[in-house]
Length: 279
Ligand SMILES: C[S@@+](CC[C@H](N)C(=O)[O-])C[C@H]1O[C@@H](n2cnc3c(N)ncnc32)[C@H](O)[C@@H]1O
Image 1 (cartoon, helix red, strand yellow):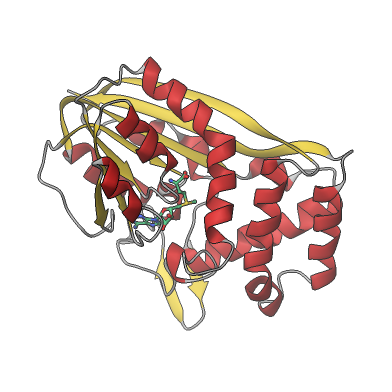
Image 2 (cartoon, helix red, strand yellow):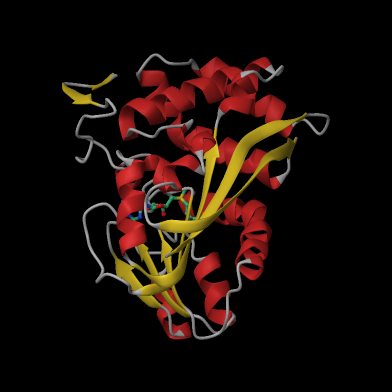
């Protein structure tokens, strides 16, 4: 497959080298932490995902004193909760603006690119990434890096979304705007919006044992946090999507009307969690 991004063409075949940045990294454009609504958008995401994440950490045996790496920590709620459990937490992001205050809670906050920056091998007992790996040009290579940073017996946990439930939504506004947004993410950032449905296969053959997996659909109801998260996500992306001719302003307005309608009910993203222990 060849992905065209403006003047650049990136080979994305199975045997090709995707280990290079596209023109725009996730945080460079519409999701920059400098965008006025980005912190609120990240908080909404946390409000719909954190409970599941905490339950997964508990089920996998998180204990006080564990060295935990939280990759692409965003708004920081997971890192803050982990520190509250007595873990020794390192949180990274390309932009640590929303994370810096966690240093006061004893969290190590690093501006660190999971794709190109390193850690010494065997540094962590847990590594967790949520809604991060799909945005990297080569998710599988990212998994290999993460496994190297695990201590023997350490656990990798990935939580990543896939878009397929939305593609076939019966709601035309929601379906049209989200399909256009998805296309923008794929071309501008290089996000593989269906990679997550292949989990846990990408964890196989990488030195992990005891692989586990769960899958669920995020539900969405008009005006709830998931709907508001999508509205902000769409609104931040709208100028680029409209400029690229992928959708019109009217398409976005139709989606916003549906997302605000108290009667609106649908599926949102499918969320896949996969984990394994380093042998
Ligand atoms: C959708 S947000 C998710 C934030 C957080 N993980 C959560 O689930 O609440 C993606 C985050 O990953 C960060 N990110 C994207 N690419 C990254 C990279 N190569 N290295 C580190 N962080 C990255 C972004 O800056 C952003 O904060």
